[in-house]
Image 1 (spheres, rainbow, N blue to C red):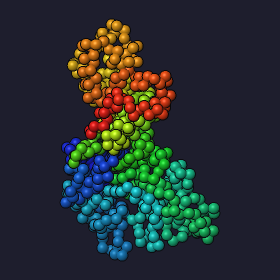
Image 2 (tube, one colour):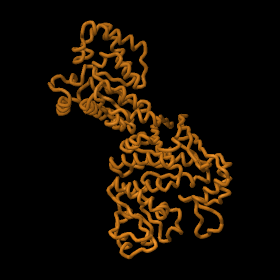
Image 3 (cartoon, rainbow, N blue to C red):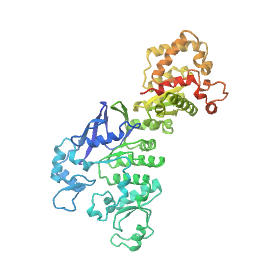
Image 4 (tube, helix red, strand yellow):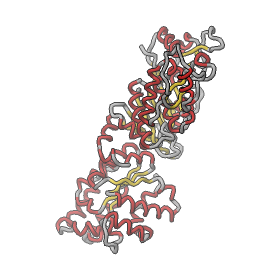
Length: 525
């Protein structure tokens, strides 16, 4: 058997229960100040006694069964003695922490409920911004015998790891890496030495000088150092559980995406359980793009002092990624916003975002408008699939559609359900009472341009108002004047041209019907 520790499940302060991928990446997303970093700290803390968590209530840790001999072999293979007293029998974990005798380790592993003192052997936690120090520091002047727990020691002993790391850095940044083995302090340098590589037991002054002339990794930018720092820990396979906060910090979008794709694939291939917290859409896109690697997305949110979470497993992630509208839009950026508004086109996004910003400014609710993302769907028929991908993740989702959406009951029903609502008998009755006379009188061409004003008076208008109110309650906002351009009919343009002219005239500041329609977006969730 393999000596193996894994996160199993956890309960949040709200009572929500989550499962962690046993290998591969579990990615925690959400807006600011919802508790993503604290969740990682709680995971680490709950492995120790007398820890008071904030986001989590409990944590289940799974240990694979193993014999005493197997556990002792594991400790001896993965630990190292104190160089100052190597004969006392205590071994330190590679990442630092308390030393323990192999027999004592075996007893704790086999009989303890949690991990406790063994945490340093299985769990590595990197806080936001800390990755840059992992690979940029040297082993030290004492060499690999004095500091055997340094992650670069494995690279010193295994040139294949060095080659793999260098290849990754070259693919991502165009920078080759060389491990300096010949100038005292073992460390990573950038580039390839311009000298023949001698046998390891016959170093030459020429090669040593050429290596020393290469710039140190520690002098590179934060993004390069962070990327390489995480890669070093994954490639050495020193830990079965890795908790990483903002692994994409300091990276450009393309590099963040490359890191996500690489991390998903490598963690699965190396049987490493990775839990990351991120603010970055491109990193998430990279994770999702590694289609054969198991990825679970979890969206965390906070209401008062309670934390709630929704998750989608790997099969659902693949389904999400298969939709080209989701794949090639900024819809997944909604994972990091409080609310997402799906519109029919880019022009709609521009106009309604301008209206919302002005309403928020005049009402002192700018902080709410700043956390709203507008996303174009490319047409009414695509709205439901986009909303259906965001709603299960707990994203507060709205849709804004022109009045002629109501010309097709099936499309309305799909959209209501994708927004998390229920198409009730009352809504169906209101729809029929309003739509039937409009159909009989062939009013839809006029309704498309004028909206509610063209509906027959009396019961049809009354039932329409009831329907619009019910749709508004589930997040479906129907343009009451027909279409966006009907908010200001003195501008004889259409689409983006109309929007540009409307904004130039500052018409969004006085467009009362549009301002009233967007009011639900500024309500607290």
